[in-house]
Image (cartoon, rainbow, N blue to C red; front, side, top):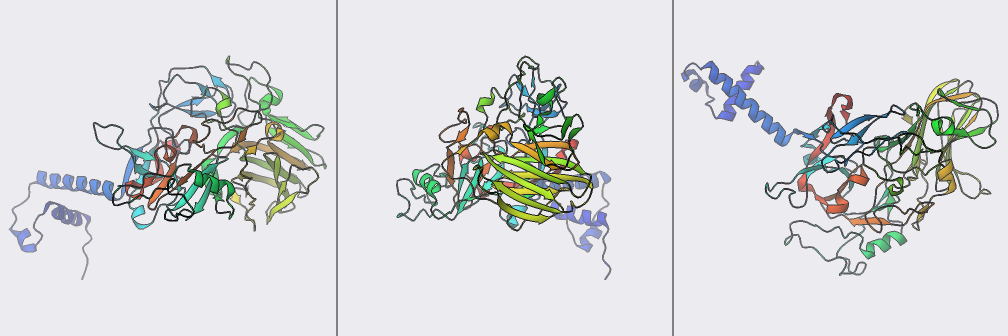
Length: 544
């Protein structure tokens, strides 16, 4: 039997179902001729019903109002073109942050004078898929949209606002925020285990009497002690994948955007280490000549722009979690960020050339050495007499003259390397043990040369950029970092996540109200997963 796939007939058939019209052939023949205007009205009704059904069960569009997910998603913002380096960055214009602008360039640190924000761009428009979580549970690092889990903001409307955050904590996990990283222990807390956990700290919640598991047992002494001691090594650091690293990294400095009114080391921020030769630094980039392995170091020099221009040379500062999207008052209230990335294009003249990318973390040097078609990873201890510790080895295609795109990231106690935008695969994954939970202290190396490049042979480095990892802030002990020099960490947050609940954090950790403030999100309140930005045009893309 031949099928009739005429779309208009199918449409009319569906309209009849929606409107409850008779469907039998006999009934259709008895009908009087139809009014064309009625046909149009039926079609319009069907389209409206179809749109409502799609919105309810398939997909829906949302507008991002605030900057809690910057720089993954932007809320209302003003785009600023830095008059010093030409770098374009967004500055928050959302209602809960709107104030007299204190603009600070993400790239060069230039403080633009306060200006009236007249050209305000609305937030990103995102597409949210609603059916996905009906077939599979949410996963860590998803970006879901959900109903605010507490009472409505507007009690008169009796309606919760929609929130969008990144999902970091899964059901039955105990999660800690420490040194800016995420630590997770699975199935650690059994609230019925009264021998391990005191009843006064972990009162049982009866779901029959209470609508939700509202408590996260935030920073309960038993959990804090368990995390600090961790005799069985139950807390594992969450290590991001290469794709996730590129999603949340934040720019520190791009030498393709140089401050025009500065000169020397302040302008370029790169300079040969003391006594090192063979290096040239200019507008075109960094270049090395000679058969001796020598080093050039990045200096995080941020001039005083308080008067709209450079006033004096300052000493190198620690790389901190500055985000130009947020209003700031002083760098003293910004965390030191030890997890860094360096990215560059390296053009070598011969296969005998050697390149070493180096990142410093709490005084230790972490290196990726590229030589003769191989990449070797090393951890160099602070003890000058100690031998470098190998962390992995992989084959590369850097075995002849040419131009190569190189990246090295030291995020989450893992070294990740890309060659021409493809991550290398190491047998040991480049992992190393997390630091002891007695506090992380910066050293002079973290301040004076947090990033270095070593080179042997004739090599030209262009488009060299420094990035940092996202820095998750904790709410306990101190809301701001210690202002001591050198900076250090000794506080953390720890939460228990109940079954069928999730812990959500904003990517803009310094300016996000999230599960650190109002607790967990039950699965029933999750509306769907944000999958793409569809507006504005220059930000169209998949949300990762």
